[in-house]
Figure 1 (cartoon, rainbow, N blue to C red):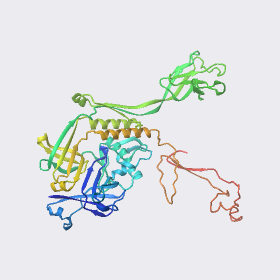
Figure 2 (tube, rainbow, N blue to C red):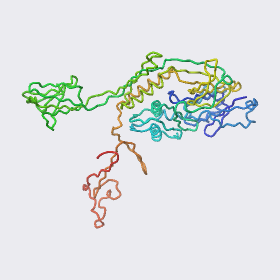
Figure 3 (cartoon, rainbow, N blue to C red):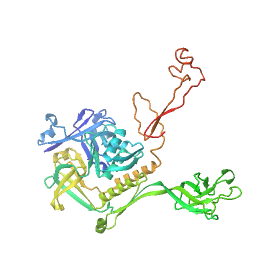
Length: 526
């Protein structure tokens, strides 16, 4: 049997690629599927055939007749099995004249997820698949979402601040126990882990070589999750003795309000050692770092010390960290303690921190097994689906593993020998690329840390028809212009119009009959 390939770009088909490499991967591995094609370019044979941004489709199939590979023009091949659908992102030329080659490379449509960001948005009490579809609908074009399945996870609160769509989906996949990828038909698949069977078994009939490795390098059975800090209300009460002017609080205060002797009018406060008493009228000072309220007295400040028996109520906000801690006792007893600390300032709700903690323990409480197998023949496998593995000599009998990555390498030698496939199964062990990716994500989180979904953003859009607004609150204010002069207005932009006697006053320069604003609003308060 012989394997053959075809490349299609812009409706044009090419059968003369010297080398094709396709890597099929899934989103939870921090990577997209990608391709690399090498074409002969003798005397500029293909110099005008490809352009950056072109859609490229690679097909592969096999035939029983070796003549079909040696004399391809005489055989009606069935090029219907797609290996990848992607976008050309890089074109290179190597060599000179008769020995020149052209190299095309790019990613599948997961590139659209990696290149787009999620505009600042907050989701409250939303099931994960609803969030996924909303993110896709509002930030990504050209990819449909009919492959998104409903999860059993509802998030009380989650926010995204200009992280890539890819990383947002990965975060949602991690907390819900799902995986995601974009298939060859440009459909986003968001599926339960290990829920889709490929229907294929790897055994001694199709495996040429295999290696399996079990490791605890990525284990985590004791997890700390540190999110952002939140301001929460707190109150301290005191009874004055008439002599003391300093009262110590439980926490460092923010947004302080002090009431004395049941008064409903708060005292006027200032910052310790930063107040000029003469003109300020300050009655107490806040010593933030020492957590103290100091009532002032003296020539400039006056006597503000509460009299003996007066009640003092101090309402303030305290800065409370979001921290969650959890462990798996059985894993610790078996493998020893494996501690992981997650610091993510984008976690602004303790319930999300709990979801992250639970998902981390579930994913990494046990050692990971990873297998690398070289196969005979060709089978179109999709990373994320499961595959049966039956290799008794490796100690693996009728086990089900998740496909992590599939690599295809097509050239004349591999096609003739049917040795074009390598498959990676089970749990992925982290490598240098994963470490670099995590560093990039951490830097990105720092960069967007000060972005808030409540920020006022000025937008300018020129369009005809309706427009959607993606904000929590919006306001439309209207006012009538009467006979004011408005430059460019079809009526009020012409001095002296309308004509007197037709129902309105004449427009004159400098006149002003603007009414007050009438507010129309939705999703907020006036």
